[in-house]
Image 1: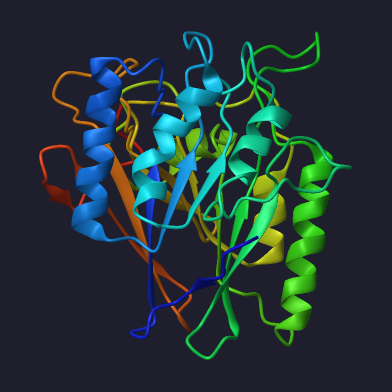
Image 2: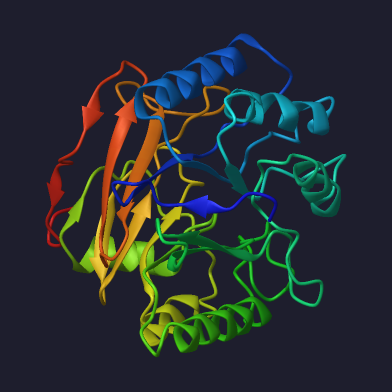
Length: 310
């Protein structure tokens, strides 16, 4: 990582989550997506931007590398550190994940690392945020959730694999040991939601909207169980489902959707594009989160959904 992430002097650290930008070829919809991102950046002045997948629509882009550069341009030009995890549409055609992570690595302010070569995917890494005294105060885990299932016996989307989970557990255990046995407050970012996103909507009080099915893998590989056991992850942040933006707490972890940012793919009338904002504070095991929408409005209290509602 070429840029160190630091809490501000007031002990805050703010993250903007942009998801499903789906940049294609610079069409009018792409330019609307850029305008929205610039509006959010200007209003919120984040310390970090995380793109949670489908940054580019490689299935419709004539040049996915150029599309990627255009998608991240507004953030990079403002000299804001940024990270990226890949989605299922980023590398469907023309370009590979290896090629795209190499492009991201060219940027001095991109804090995503290539990740261990011996585990599945690209960009699996852990980012450290230090407090004003230079001590590690929080961690951000980035995970590649893949594309489609690689097994003929399992249909649907890919899942975060066993070797990635084992890497997370090792990384978490090491960080906890280095912190005197206390888990560091941590967040996790990936593209495709876990099966537990469906479970939390069905079983717990959630806040926000669910206008489509949770398009999670049909196989539960156990990442959520590992996070509960390690005791460090406070919240997870995904995209993928463009018209879901809810969050709910399951076994002590807040499972959060972002708010779809891109105009170049499907949405829903009356459901504006936007971004999810996240604020950490050094020394606190909690975080704030809110939505900023394309009309400039801010939603801090999303509507409650009771588990017995349809």
